[in-house]
Length: 385
Image 1 (cartoon, helix red, strand yellow):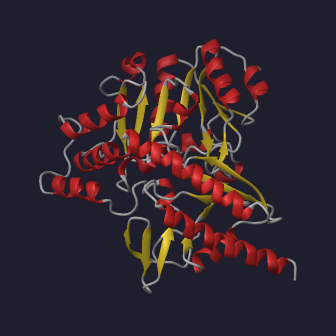
Image 2 (cartoon, rainbow, N blue to C red):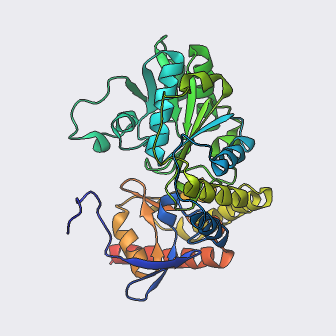
């Protein structure tokens, strides 16, 4: 083994996938309710995206951002048309998108402090690790960047008490994903928006996991009618092709002039082709309405079948980003679900997280709920023996 052991890998080797299903090297098939952790929002190998990438492969793979890239312009247009934002910077990941947001906020405001929230997750680069409100992500790396302050999530009073003329931005997730699938309340998110206005700070919304239709709108902040200055995106943006984006208001454009920021691979022709095909499918109004309906259906089914179990405390989330809150460690159940043909993931120690493809069928949702019911009931029975 020549890889750094930076991942606790499951004993599973996936060799093929189509739609909501994947198959391992032993021929066993699974329902995939992880989707690459909210990446494969159209399932595995969606035909429209595969076709667009194949067409681009036959033309040109990569050119420098020193040249015009028509597909990149088209991808940016699809993002701005779906939001109240005006400009896009393409990069390669969510962490890079958040790095760009931090740099842009500091350069535009000429201030240094960025306020984030406890249990947040914004990435693993040095700045985004410093922005993340989880000590386990930061341990062992020495002194962090000193310009970040962490407030309790969903605490309006803490936001209202925030003071100072040194705050460049407040960065927040609409739903904390890695922090436990915890939705922000409307009152809290509106308080963040208002405080940014009072302080002359920018509102940055990290939509790396919640964006690209995951909650039934192009971006989750639209559920609350928020008007952020910057939004970051990645994961579902390219249907598995590595790409990230930072979207910003027109007032910020002068701070990111030529030479102020850049990336070699960001938004290259292959990535842009994947983005365009993905967004043209997901940002369709009827498709998004279907995501809302599926999210409500799946949540209702989970509540009906699982809330009677003593170990299950709550089902929470938005759209097709759902967490099942337990009173015990979730990882053993993830293993048992996998053994029974369903892939799920944790969000913190005691939350099972479900992130099915957005085009999942009702039949597939019913099958997943049935597997979960069986596994959790069996676990409950064993505990009572």
